[in-house]
Length: 385
Image (cartoon, rainbow, N blue to C red; front, side, top):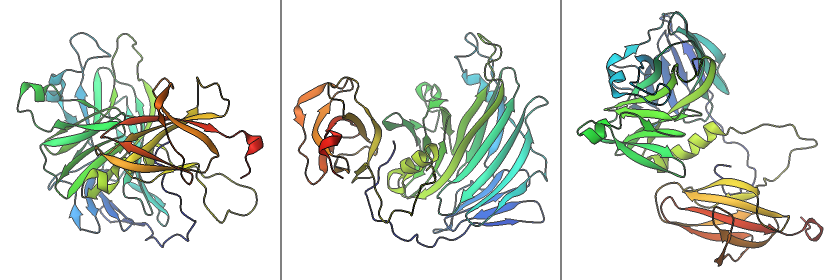
C-alpha cells in the first residue's frame, strides 16, 4: 500500500515550473524542472546533476554517472548462486557512440531524452531518461536485450559525497554497510542486498539511488553501483536471457534521507499513481480509506483477514521506517466496529484492544517495529456513509 498521507481537502495545484529541455550543438541534453537539473553527454552519460535550490553538484568532479560497466562473472562452483569478489578486477566500461542521444518528450509536464547502447556484439540497451514536473528524482527507464555468457552488467554513479557508510533498504527497515575495505569483514560485503533504495549521505547532503526491481547494490568510496543483469549457465543455460525492462532513479537531497523523503520517493517510483476515468463530475473533496499522521510510519499492507470468523474483517500491517520511536494516529474513513492488535498469523493479542477516537487509532512504534491490526467493520446493513 505504501504511504498513506494525512487527508486534506482538494486544493488548486500550486504552480510548478515546467520541465525545460535543451539540446546543445555538441549533442548533450539538459533537463531542468526547477528542483533538479540534469545534463547528459552525447552518449547518454550523466555529466551533471544539480540540486537547484542549493546549487549543489552531485556528480563527482571529472567523473560521469549512468556509466554501464561489464564484468567477467565466473564463480568457482555454483554458477547461478555465487558471485566471487575477483570479478571486480575485470571491470570494463561500456562506451557509447556520440550522437546517439536524442530528445524524446520536449518539456512541459515531462521532458525526456533517449539513446541506444551496444553492450556487446550480442546484447544491446535502450534507455529513456525522464524528468517530470515537480519530481525530486530523474528516472532511467531501461530496456535490455541480453544474450551473454558469464557476464555481469552494472551501472555506476560517482557522487560528490564522502561517508564511511552507505544505507540500504531491507524489508521493513534499513541497514548500513561500510564504503571501504579496511578489514576482511568489510571486503566480504562487496555486494549488498537492497530493496527499493540505497543512499550515500554526508552531513546535510546526500544522493539516493532508487529502483523498481533490482536487489544487488554496493558503494565503494563514493561510487554507487546497482547490479542489473547476470548470465549464469548452470543449472539453466538460458537463465536471464532475452528482453528485460526496469527503471532506476537518482535523487539528490538536502539533509538526512529520512527528512528528505527518500523512502516516500522510492514507494512512489515502485507504485505510481493510476489515473482512471470516472463517471460524472470530479469530487469536491478527497477521500482516503486510511492515513497516518507521521511520515515515519508506513502503511504497508491492507488485506482481508484469513483466520477471523467475521466476514468483514481487514488486516493492516504498518512499520516504523525511519529508525525512531514515534507515536502516530491511524485515521480511517471506514466504519470500524472493533480494532485489536494481532501477530503475523493474525491471532488476536488479548491485551491489544485499541479504542477508536474520532475515527482514529493511536499507535506507538519503536525503531523498525512492525505492527499488525485486525479491524472488524460494521456490517453493510448497519452502516450509512
